[in-house]
Length: 371
Ligand SMILES: *Cc1c(COP(=O)(O)O)cnc(C)c1O
Image (cartoon, rainbow, N blue to C red; front, side, top):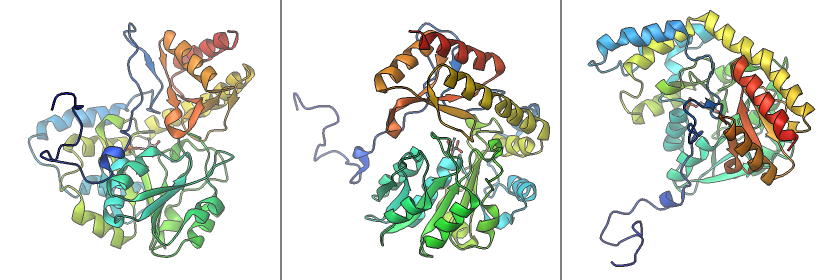
């Protein structure tokens, strides 16, 4: 035991299940720049207006009850979500972020050797827990930065258990029309789950986007997920949900941790759902600045993909230029998201922020373009 690396497997030590150490750990958006006291963090698609007043007040009031275990069924939040979206409460699955809903679905439906299918640039959270269940991940090519029904269906084989699409998608910002989602669903064998991740639903303006709640209502194999992390500004509280066929919700209820959503989280999420003014302000901010940022950055000669989310994906000439732009933005106290981990090393994803933040990004990229 002299020169062995610390993490080398040792027959006498516990060894993680096959495949686990081969998983690349998730790296979240960076939040610090050396020497900058308060950087502008535009790297994780958070709501730069913060949480609304109502959610904050509910969170503060909940401090009186933090010694009490949460209601394991999150009944109050369940009723509020069901009412808000017109969904059957018993078909809802709550999780520690929608990330946990994906992990629970993977845990419940994947056995070793099964696979999930998602787009080439699909959200990385789907794959990590799939790999943890010793399943494989199959990726459909997205030559136009969009997962199409044809390409996804071409990846489906007899070991496929779950197909994941996000609409709008992160990091590309593309989305699927209801016709495309329907076509995908119709092409799937009935035992394959289709998960439609609608984390950015509230930011869409395109008239040919539609929620898949309606399609899911009459289907036995569609789960639609939503989150409180984006429009509601509660990323730090970790709350998301899925609208699932009853049988799926009943399966998940058997394996989830009994108290997976916290007391303050439930209270703040209920208050956020009831805060239409904050939702509108958050949406308006994106609807105002998404076209402005897209146009301004294109004006500097960089490619900006059309986005239906609260972020833009900027494409540079090559990976070196994207890295230089990232360094330049950092030097101006701005943190954005390099997306090499998604196979997009020539791109940077930039969360749309407040007016001041957006102007700072535009100014910095304008100066960078001249370098
Ligand atoms: C941000 C995001 C989510 C939300 O994740 P939470 O775990 O609910 O915070 C889900 N899907 C995509 C594609 C996202 O970008």
